[in-house]
Length: 184
Image 1 (cartoon, rainbow, N blue to C red):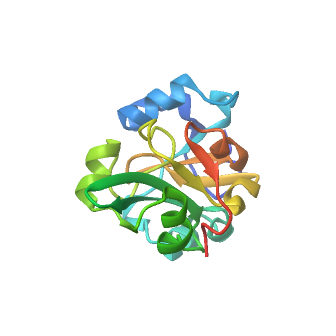
Image 2: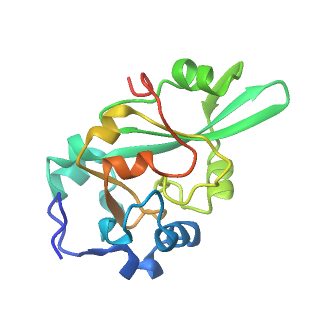
Image 3: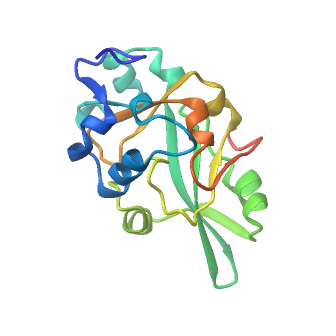
């Protein structure tokens, strides 16, 4: 199989590579969501030592600078209450944590979640967190620019490997909200 973007020597339907995914990601791929066929999610093997965005794009294809998305875990706080959420923006943007995220969550403060919290709550590896397979109760905030991409490269739940999905498929994930101004 040839990946719809990038120069990857090992690409296959993610449903055929469940053994390389974390349990929550494999479960979500198997179950499917929003009418998105499991076959439209592609797994590509990647070298975790090439994870830096610029190095990654140089090795796997410069167009990935425009079609890669990052998923970050944030924690909104109001008093003692903490609301975890995930945010997905294109790799060339940054998440507006103290503006768009804080307002959407209705919290007094928002910040990036600690590594322990992000890994412990998602069941995924730090540096590979993906919007597919996140806890169902979490808000999943997605910048419109991500949804507008025909194909988006995202994490696979592990540092090794990535998933390529239609941008619109991410908007169909459980808890997804397309939020204007999320990526700045």
